[in-house]
Image 1 (cartoon, rainbow, N blue to C red):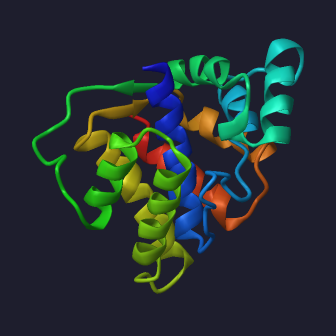
Image 2: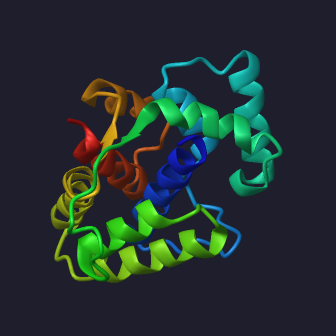
Length: 183
């Protein structure tokens, strides 16, 4: 589950970037979202010790190229639980299709780029920021309800991300998706 948890979190990050109109490069770097900083923050850890070193190394080299990717995956594992998916998990378009792409992905750069592109197409259908935020929340709820994914944090943990993430569209959408996962 460790590597799949990291793949899912990076997929959520790619979807948030896509919703906000950002492109994710083929190498998997997600603009404006540093998963290596986000994971320790979600766990409520400070920037010191191993976590600080890990976050620093990963952010300098790009998440997918980080030599400590396995350790980062281990940190991600406690955050997500994959339960029993419903029979709806084979969708190929819309929010359900995006959720399927996120949960079925390996976290490769090409897959993250595809997730962002699909999210961008969906996001362009919304009329305003509120609709976009609702769509992001719906993605979280779909990941939870149809795909059995749950976030083992709480709304307070998600709100704590305000200290780590800048207050921009991407971080707002990322938090909205995570809030949709909170049971």
